[in-house]
Image (cartoon, rainbow, N blue to C red; front, side):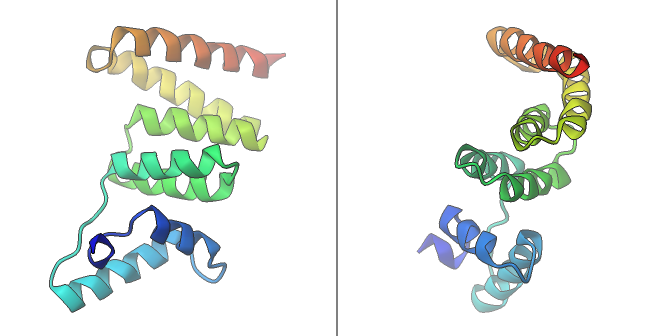
Length: 138
């Protein structure tokens, strides 16, 4: 039932298999079609995009994960959690310059948004990202 209004994870996986269009193009078409058909569509938020991209990243489908993280950033370009996960994905993909740039930006956002995150998250993510940046300098 929810697929009538919402591009769920299975739908996103199907979109990722289509080499003729980007996931964004397919998402846009999906929402137009559902709006016309049902006079309603549910637009994902940045948290949903992060969650879905994490699933693709964890299955080593890095290009799909990157594309979906970027959809989340279109909605919230200062979302440090998406940026950290995107940096991690570039790192895992071996695109270290992109990863380094994003880790640097993410750490800057982490400091600016320190009061909005759990103290353990702050400590752990800062240590991890700092370690990654040190590795890139070697």
